[in-house]
Image (cartoon, rainbow, N blue to C red):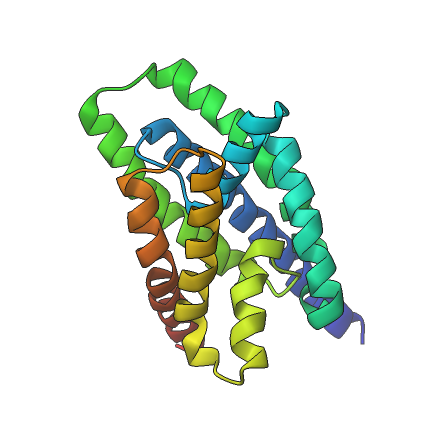
Length: 210
């Protein structure tokens, strides 16, 4: 029994670390999109637009909008709420602000090649961060859970990428209304994040099975 308890505690600790790493990557990914100036991911574009319109920090708007989505999770699938959900809800916006400050301090405004690289790195970093946070099975970021819940409620889990595309497009429309930072990067992420997350999940699960 002590050995089983030790293994269980080790597994839980590993999942907590995985969840924290996933959320750190998401925060870094959002910061990279903001640094690139080519348009942020759809959800961040919406929150930045609202932030600029009402005059409060991006991190606070992110916290409030996550609160709205967590209410939906309570009603439709509270099993996806956990440690990772709370970390994501309360920290990612502020982590993004912090990482953006570091990027600007280290790299300045950045040459064109740096901006392009940061956009490409942002797409991969965001997708990997979301997949790791899901893989940790300690709760999912409220917005990321939305497409997952929709696809599961439709009993079509394979439709996840299309559900994600739909929620991202709604965020793009809202960002447009609030004059959020839309650009080619936003379009790329709106159409690529869902399919790329599906691909990364397949790779992660294949390696786990192997």
